[in-house]
Length: 302
Image 1: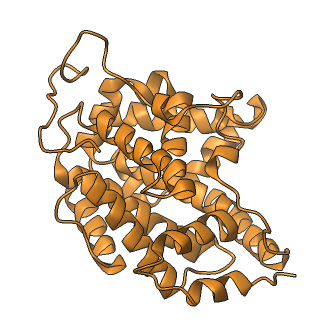
Image 2: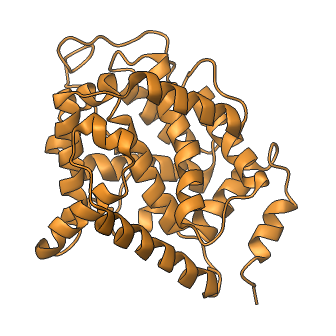
Image 3: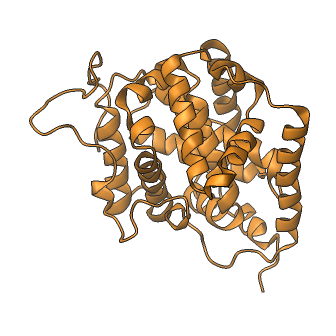
């Protein structure tokens, strides 16, 4: 029988630079599937507070008018790489779709690199606060190597090399760029409404309140939300810490859990094709579908 810390011992026997995909997969799908899902949701949410990102997301209307589909497609594309790896047909197709969508817009390399940093740093910080254990140094090194690989295949330049580099890049960028934008606030409100829609209607206000209670002050200021009271913050964060203690006492997971199995992914009850996920340019129209933006020429499509 697998004991609670046996998988961590397995991870520590692997090489984080060579075996980063296996380590990442074990951590994400066996050790922390629920926590990593919540952390990556928060990671993407953080990016709205950079006005150039939040404004573009508002202009595309993908997150304000088609929130569930955008959520599903993002989760499934990222999940495909985790499940199948970078060098499989499925993995290459997922990265190609990600690149095809991004190259439709004039997104700066700095913004792309910042988004990538959120995928590395936010899970670590979430697990520090709410995980049944913290990530080991092996896992942090593997996370950095995994997202360096993904970033390289997305054509992102000047990638951070270590976890510490990712963290410094994220903190500096947020300090310099977080700010108010009306479009970003619309995207934020739509995302909170989407999360509320996953639960019975009477619970939606509680979900919104709990979500706001998890936001740090820099995000609350950027979106101009009223700071939740100490009781709301204490109850929400305390409940997550109690959950972590309970999970620590449970038997470890015996089978992997992928994002495609999450109940929040609702748009493909009959299955999906990776090549059909995401958005596509309007037939017969070349260039960016958002007025005022032009596709960059430097981002490759694999």
